[in-house]
Length: 287
Image (tube, rainbow, N blue to C red; front, side, top):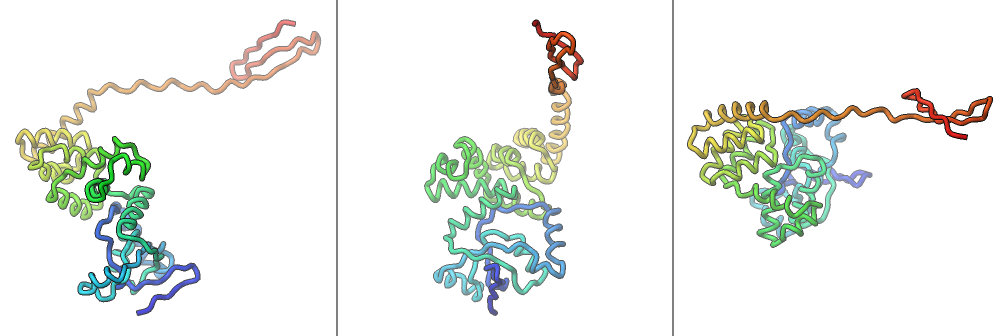
């Protein structure tokens, strides 16, 4: 199969030439996925959808993957969801831009693009930061400098990666199945539980649809030995009571409209006065 280059310097790449990036930070909701699916299945979908971003595989990488896919030439940098939907719709090809980049550069571009769109997985972000710190020996301050984050925030994100593999696998597969995502605070609650309890806490948070404050209550109950279902029920009740008992924030003072002023002159004596139009006040100046 051939690649047809368009005038926009975008090429049409057969799907069989493409493989996924081993690590992808994207997560989107089921609603967003459905909307994208509907857009892509239109008759003009293949021509209208934004092109995905691919990196050209090196000859060594092509040799490495030839047993699994003898056609593979490119690896996805950005556009995994579009690629998966294209396969579901049996597209023969997909529009793409090609770049020359290393695997590490592809990881960074993937992460940056998902951060810009607000589609980055909090758990994948933590694992990526762990990779930068442990495998590439990059200190937290340097990671922060690289992505415009404070060192404390980097350490906080990295702390979520202590979740054991079985719990991470459950979180990733379950969230993909239901099309939802966990917040950083929810992941921090799971990570703060004893290692042997983290999978159970993760199940309680996701299956129980718990908010961050509810997740914290459930974690404490599970650590104390309460069964997961009872912990979820108790967590929701306790969090609800705490919210109701919390002091209400003081109402913001009503902002008065900015006073408009002007100046008038008496036609008889020539005296001048400052006029406050909104409050209808007049201040005569001494002459």
